[in-house]
Image (cartoon, rainbow, N blue to C red; front, side, top):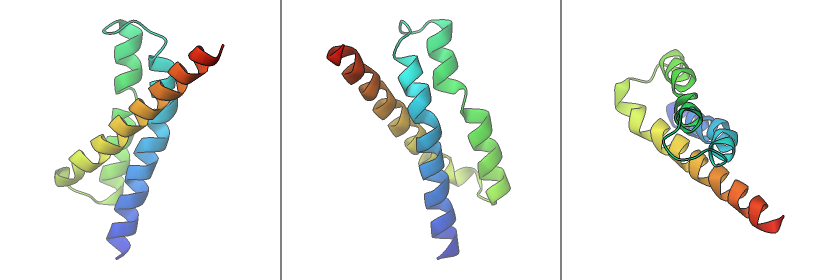
Length: 85
């Protein structure tokens, strides 16, 4: 059960880290340096956290899923903010 909570915490942290990155990414044109930067900047930190938590490479899809969800939510927040201005 302890491993489940650690994995859930890691996924939620990946999500939380990527919400602001997705928010900032949305203001850059697709496939520019800034866009790539905000898509990938959290990856080394998430790898470090996954290794320090003791999870093997088999758990990478879960953390990537949390990161992608955070990017999507952050982008949606930015688009919603722009449409309200």
